[in-house]
Length: 64
Ligand SMILES: [Zn+2]
Image (cartoon, rainbow, N blue to C red; front, side, top):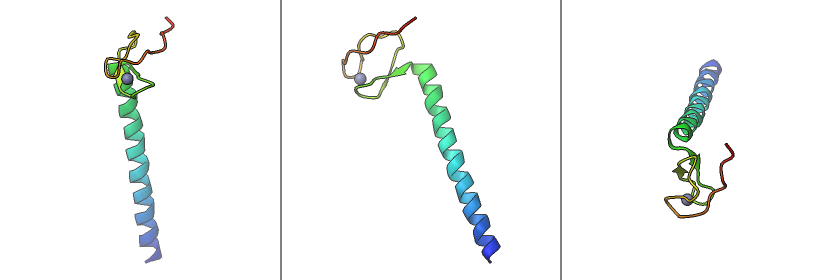
């Protein structure tokens, strides 16, 4: 019985770990696809944008 509980705990931990990793991967993919996240509203804007199109906050100028 204890072995079964340990197995379930390990499986749950692995599932949560996998979910977190998948979310981080999706976030990285979104950043690559949509650009950088706005420091004001957190939405993704074009990497070269000077002003956020969502909240019109000024963005740090990209260093190319
Ligand atoms: Zn914004």
